[in-house]
Image (tube, rainbow, N blue to C red; front, side):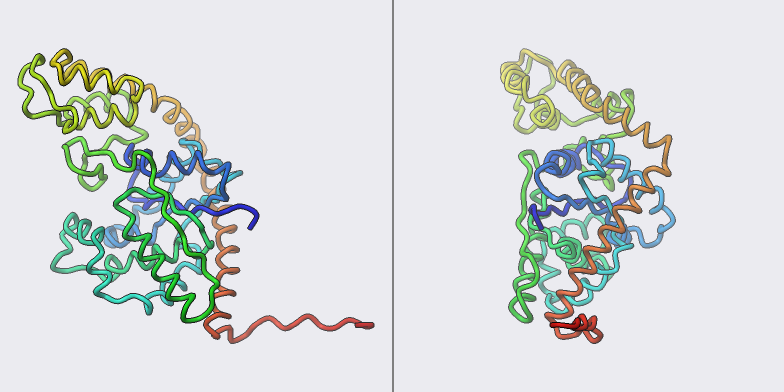
Length: 341
């Protein structure tokens, strides 16, 4: 490989939101000029919480692809592919399952948090419990060096690193141990004041939301509960709207924070300014996305081409893995000697 590789991507459980953008999408679009970038649409992982609604995946895969393309992921620079169509990922998941204990999975803090969100504490599907193992296969099938993630995903990356170290120690050092790369703004609070913006919690602004929807959602956003009147002195550090100003309106955020603390700006004009900033930011993304919506066959072609490239890389990795494990039962024959050699 002439350049270091990045593996990044999304679970297709609906369109992407601004939390995805600050957590990973902005990074992947920016870094694709510097790194060889693989962008996975993790449809198999989406089934861990949507196994009873698989028919929705076809639309969701297209939605996630269009959002990535609209945000600047360039198919000439990045490999955009569908997880379930790369056999190497499923094969590696099976092999890695022998290198991880059930207790390690149960103690993963991200698993605990998401299990509570999906009411899986008492009856957890095996696929959900094991998806960090599948994620390790996602990262390593293409021998990625870096994984841009939000802070909540760091436990998964550490598990991948442990799996790689154990595999390389047991068999042969053929896998790349990846490093996490956390974005500057790795998490946005939800509109409801929750710690994280989430599609499942319904507290998100989507990249495809039209201007009037953005306005309606910001109007409902939780602010400082201690502020009753516009002249009350506020506490921007606990305000959802201010956190969004810090993420998307850096130039004005310090001034807005000072005015909030002094009681010289109320929540209504603060929200109005955020609406204007967000719609200005989202307008070119919405415009590019509209173009892809008019040509879904182009999006499918991009995914097909990227998936073929991913399958090729997966085959190369599996050749190394099977040789390391001494299970390459039918290795290709050595080239025949030519006359004179």
